[in-house]
Image 1 (cartoon, rainbow, N blue to C red):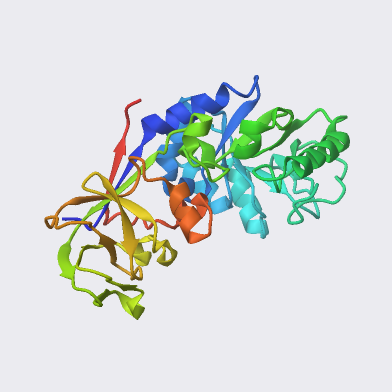
Image 2 (cartoon, rainbow, N blue to C red):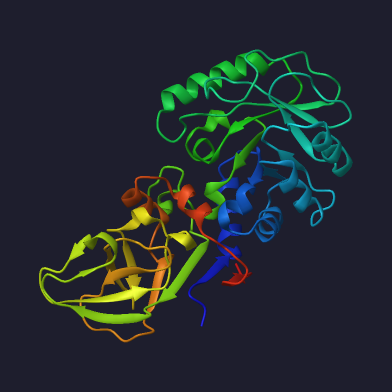
Length: 339
């Protein structure tokens, strides 16, 4: 028996893509599949997104782009991150990848997007250079589309003013802006989290008509009753105040179930139950509420157990947790194609 199983519902991903597309008023949707599609499997996620109306793929690095090029000949693939070496530029040229230029010289012989820093304060030109013939797009990156719409709109005004005279593809919106800021959509939007059913606002994705794509399941491997004053786990962070049935689940922070998730809830035998004690590298304890048999199923994500809820407990965001799940091929991994 595998310690846990990951199921990726490509039907849900397709429905999420169509949900976002309905909002875009003709703008293109470019599917962001960096970091192994936020932990969902880049090759399968890319195919599902393209088949549902996405018109390009976005990755963070040239190696990510090359891996997808082997599977998707002729599809637009945009490398969003910095390209540090002439070797990578040559590889991108040979593979017909599109590069984002953040500063310095514009390379020749490869299609390029120029990035303007309008307020993120990371990569990007402070002032756009004169585009060369191989420049096909201009872009910016919004810092607060999920939290501070006033600043996001200021960034958009700066971007529009700097690029409105250019006959180039303009793109600025991430998932949050695509969902909530119509004026951010321009010619294309770059959507990552939303297509995987991860809310960019760290709230219930159903509020925006989105469905979580990933289901992560395990089981109760051991059951014991703690007596009053007995504890479970490192550091005795949970001490029973009364006789308490606990189950040990064979998943831990080594698998991507963060050490900060003590106190979150998982679904045990269909009922939400709290995680207690310290999450270990390969196991954690859950308060069962009653005696349950070994083998009782445990849902870590999906079926109403939201990444957003876990993230709130861990003091992080849902993207962080999703990309941290170890999808080693030795773990059972199942892809559902319907929908």
